[in-house]
Image 1 (cartoon, rainbow, N blue to C red):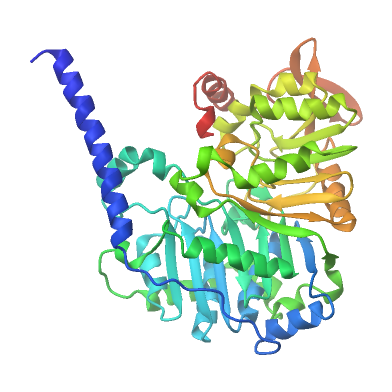
Image 2: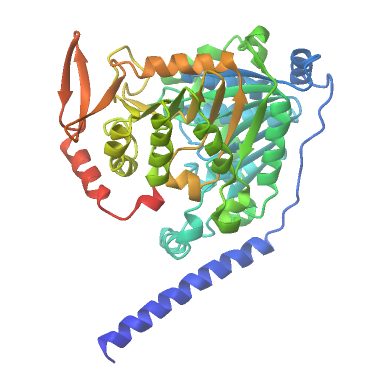
Length: 518
């Protein structure tokens, strides 16, 4: 047999295996038995959060109350106290939930809520989450908790089989649920960019993320619940039990392991933050809410993860793009993973030609946790700068204070938001990159509120100061970074604070045809 024949047979065999893997997975999804479930009906005063929400929303039935959370410690407390306050339901949807210090402290409070009779539904992305199948099984064994995985792999414990499945199902496995939502009793919702894990709550050992959450009451919560139900009951959300081999119930052991965290010194800042607080109302003052009449909670439909959207349609981006391009005076964009592509460069520079001030904050190469994405972004820096877009790159280690309670002082941007014209804002999970636009499902909150946007603009102004970020310049066609030390200005020729290996990796990736996957 010739080498040509061997190559052809090998290619055909690989194609057949790929088709077989896709067909097998589709058949498996059809065979999995699951029962649809839906939002539980809210009442005027059944639970503490019912009374809290009803009091806040009295005579404001058509509005939504919002609180912006930028502090990582406050974000941790808000989730834990929302679980502690729940009396009827917890609906939780996350791309990533780590089995680390803060992830397990929050999970312990979720299990405690289930012990009180609260119905708990947890939807996690199978690729993003770092919990083991043992923890999945233990959690799902609780009679009041149901766990589902989004777009899961069937091969759970055999590394070789899992690798083969991911290789043969690459196109479908590569589509992930990037949504983040925390809903308690249908009365309180947290939506934003944070996942559940140490780097999102200032406990990361390598780096800690700067991010936004919105705590919401009122109409926004009902909209968030409906989106959760759409995902929970979609064909891509699979109950975890059929995916796992039978094993002993380790919930009791998991409880013991979580209880041991009380005695760990590293847990002190988090336990102290909520020690004397029994409910969310203890952490968020009722007069702290900003009331908004014009608001929408947006999300891609779950079918996007199956590649079933008509003509590659992207619901979320198609809604937001006219809002961005409709800017009249100025817009502040924050995107940790920023790859605008030719279309994005054209849209932003078209605004600057109209006299609009366009400012973008993203990660520097030293600050980013995904060097490949920075490589994709760097291609567009010259065109953006030439077109009048102001670029700022967050420093990896800020000149002012520590970002961490117990872990690394290295900072990394994770906020996905924009604010325009002092009036309109968006906060969510959507990065301005090809992965968020075309592959992942995303969600967020679009609103009109001068008070809330004023808070966002103040944070943007602070984060783009020279002690936190490098303003990027174009000098004689070359990209430069402005560095200010003791009032003295200098222009850096190379990516600041980035080591040789990281710089070389980014340079190499920049020339590879990977942009559509970044």
